[in-house]
Length: 91
Image (cartoon, rainbow, N blue to C red; front, top):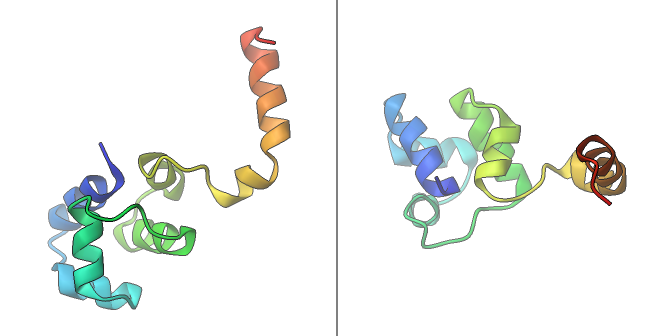
């Protein structure tokens, strides 16, 4: 599932109107609507994290849905690649 659809599904399940959700994120409802309809790329990291927290979702899963690594993992990418290779027997 793409990020926008993932967030929209959970926002609607919680009964949070789009305008209220966007207001809580301090962004325009029009912009957030475009994100949910996949007319915009996933937003900046801070908004991904804030949206996940507002919905009680795991931020790591939200980043995966956005096809982006969480910021703390990006800063240690080499460590994660080496660990992955070691555990999978890859080169």
